[in-house]
Length: 244
Image (tube, rainbow, N blue to C red):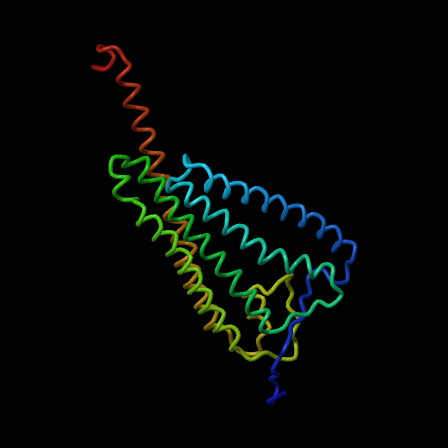
């Protein structure tokens, strides 16, 4: 169905490594091995943090969330790539592409925010240990993890809705292995500057802000450790040396 130069597309073609079957087979084996290692490593950490009472702490609660998030993230991105390597049909429907965009962006955003929360948790643990049980109590760290997932889902839903409403032209070739949001936007036959601006704002809020929080938190942690080491060193010095 067409209006002028615009076409309602029902599917996209994922270019990937099409035309290089040997490379596809090689990358399939390598990526599959990596995927299995990720599943085993993160799955083991989740089981240990659940079964062993010694690991029922905020830090391992966050690590368990991060491990589960890594499993979801890699499954979302890698599974479609592996299927694409083996399949002769490299197409994906518009609805399927939207689902992949939503899941990929949601997991990526959630991971960034969650890492920021974990950095704050480490900061309070090391720099303010007496108040740690009060600041990072059970309600607090569950809310922090839940908030990370909600932020990721909401941001992804907004971005995905804006992208799927774009008009797409006859050129439905996505130069990527999967439905990455920016790659899909470039296929649209309209001005995408507004979408790019929204994506830039979201990136600043949910990627750069957590990154800044991580840098500040670990900088304060390092400074605090040096102060503790310096104080302990001075305490071990003989009295005349302390007076110098």
